[in-house]
Image (cartoon, rainbow, N blue to C red):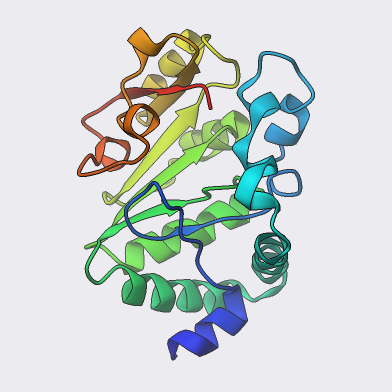
Length: 216
């Protein structure tokens, strides 16, 4: 499969300016089962979602995200997986780091299965998968899903400055976690301090159990 063919099948990759490498983004309110509910709650991380503001509201961005979501839902799993594998392999030749969902989140277990299949196909690329879908993560943990070693799943705390429970749940499932704070002294993420990741790759590294981002 050629890259242009893959783009027609699954949509193009997104290119977050602050992060290394490429990403895959979906429309925040349409592809966040938990986040779309949290967006209506004051004090939640999703009430200040960047995916609903700024550059993410450009018509071209909205169209691209909607197309990706439609293709994710309608393409046969094996075809979508092959297309994503083709695009990511090409895009990450010189920067082997990729983020799932710079906007949006996991919408189902079948979505997650497709994502993990792509990751398994590309063992030399490091994948970061943040998610607020705690029930889905519990489900796959109970079912003993095999997570490829090159995938760092981070369970994201739903409320600002309230991440203790999320950290405990994530540890219990053997995955990583993250939280958001208003206190600059608690921030451990370089990107939210210095407007970009630079050479930091903590989010992709399982050695860092919990990362705290600045409210943004």
